[in-house]
Length: 465
Ligand code: UDX
Ligand code: ADP
Picture 1: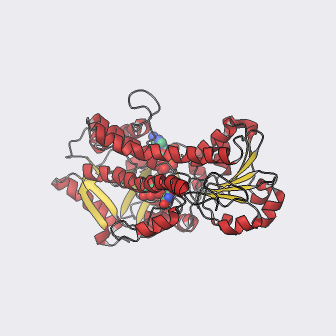
Picture 2 (picture 1 turned 30 degrees about the vertical axis):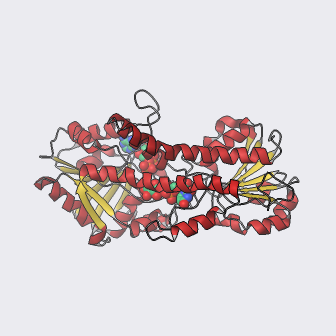
Picture 3 (picture 1 turned 45 degrees about the horizontal axis):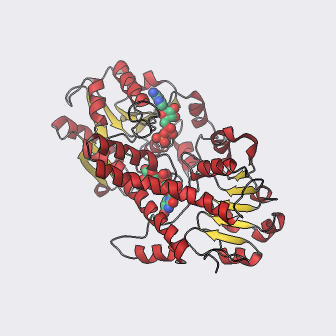
């Protein structure tokens, strides 16, 4: 143990803690990296050939470092005792009860961790906030640890910006690593320690440092800005559908302006994932608690437009399919909140499946990675939903296909074969605009993209081309 230059612990082996620590261990064989979690099943999976999360490139990184300098266990106490640096990466979901319900972050797991660190620490530690937390959480952590920035504990903020599906690439070549600290001598020393870990593979210019509060707030703001772009283009998609404009062309033309840029302008059925909604609601709650009502309302609108986009998608299906979905069968192509992940947290698929079931429609969910999660998410819908991985089998006898996730495999299916197996007239609702709409129309489908003219074989209210 003493042969290692540094001993790093991460508490929480989830979508952030697992890949992040695997990358540090992979890039820095001189450090011992120990990842702990209260969930023994998760730890068993991290120690197996079947990792608990699907992420391209993750297996290579984990399999290379595991057993060498990367260890997974449930022994939180021992982990805390021997660590020099402790990353806290436990979940901070939206609070479901009491003050701030539905908006504020639920910090109960996070507080429990802070208390455990205090209880088990016998030597000085640097504590690193990895979980996304409301501004000034580091201060709360300091209070629990009984420090004012001097003495045994230094608390740093180091928010993670990786996106799921591209986590390994994002971790290998991050746009930036952000580290916030107190600007005292001890704070800056701790910050340098953390900088020296990332400097093993991240260019120094990409390691941005700041005070703790700015670092915490930057994470919320980055996610709010990204989500805002999606809600902006999704709002415009509604206008495009009314006017016959094409949202992809609008996004392309707008994004060509270097001041705007072309990323995160893909109109969709709505954004999902564990971060965007949660972080914006956190931001809204924060603004409200400081009496900034107008600012809070401004950001809340980003979430509202996202809800509107999902409902619009459902209503479009309902109105297109002759104002009744009762007894119809719709195949959801994709359930994960984005491609290349099995994660379904806040995925639009949950809302859409629930709404379709409410309309007494039968739903077939298909996805190459997310079916296990889908079964949990939609459990209460019972027999109204079935789960079929093979897209050809899933689509058979359906009235419509609804593309909810931009998996590459959906671009390459034999849609003529699928069309022949479906009930007629057959519809496609492309919630990701990834299919060849003209080719589908030529096959016989009535095609409804997002923010583009529909291609139908009958007259519709202004959306026929
Ligand atoms: C996001 C941030 O990108 C990342 O920096 C942060 O650390 C965590 O939150 P993530 O939620 O994993 O990452 O995925 P992201 O790629 O941001 O996609 C979020 C959602 O927006 C997905 O549902 C995606 O399909 C959707 N999206 C994204 C769009 O609808 N249109 C776009 O143009 C981009
Ligand atoms: P994220 O996407 O932020 O990584 P996850 O929910 O995937 O969030 O992961 C958080 C992990 O933290 C879960 O595996 C959960 O079991 C773990 N966790 C929560 N509370 C504690 C705790 N007190 N000690 C150790 N692990 C914890």
